[in-house]
Length: 232
Image (cartoon, rainbow, N blue to C red):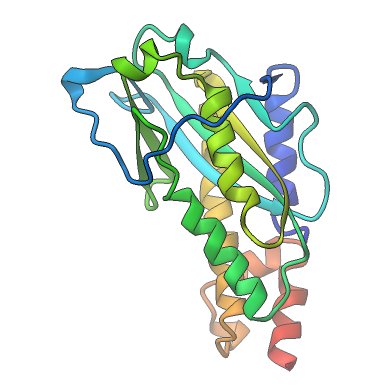
């Protein structure tokens, strides 16, 4: 699976020399459902109040970024004194995504995790249209010592529970320049994922009239997968 490798490479280049590995930590408590954090109870917001934000997930059968399971570029949660730019990038090493129900289910489960991690006192709002993720962190969570290592551990546990996921890496970013640099990647990732889902759905396609043809032409391995699917 090389479909996302160019995006992973671009992410690695942006992180090089800036990312630090966070120590392993116990997962931050997850009540199992989204917790409403009112603005009056918030310590700060990530990716809100006009600050840039981006979120995307890349899948590969190759290697992830060097350094560790949870990486941080910028300030950690206990170091923030106010609202901040924010990015959460997820890199997953998986089994080969096959052109059958198992491959389709893996993609569906990975997308499900994106919207179903609920760290206590850490209210997440994800926009699938603008590729942004905003987080409101409560003052109580800050007092209790919330940090990205613990939040990352909560995400890692959910992703690693998905059948076919071999390893996972979470990159948190509060550095404005890096968030802005990575923002264009999100649209590319979304285009790849939509095209992959289209192929796995087995929908008949006339490549000459398909709106997804530019993605197939640009992304290494996509056209081969698509043509292979058409022949089955």
